[in-house]
Image (tube, rainbow, N blue to C red):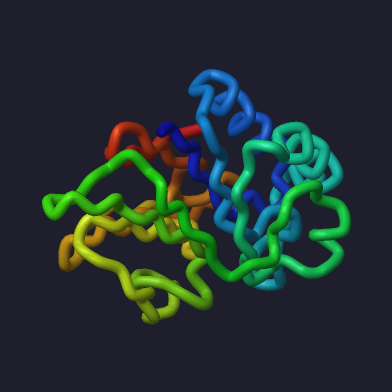
Length: 183
């Protein structure tokens, strides 16, 4: 299974276009969106390429491949304009083709980082019940993370629209490996 993982687009159209090119090049089975898709939020400066209507059009163009969760900037109006569900606090993928040492399929837990998270940077310290071999994907902090804690892989792709660590980025999951991609 191949996944593109992106978070915190915040209505930044130029950087969303770069994400769309990555999606076109990588041809993922699914695109995982970790919230904060359209609105820049009251704590962030307005992105210089802020054009949420353009972002809506781009994301709706791949709606059939998207799995999305709600960020702290999503509102009901966002769901009204997007053609895919985006208001759940978390989602899981339980059928990935990675097996742990006991023969159990791993689970990918998808969240934004303000309700569930590993307590890194500005994410909440509220880990979901995950087991060795599982993966936690979260956003919210706009800072890339890739580490292991008690056998659980913790991964933050960084931010597409408003990075706080110097580079616009997303993530790639393939064959059980996670990597960061710079846009």
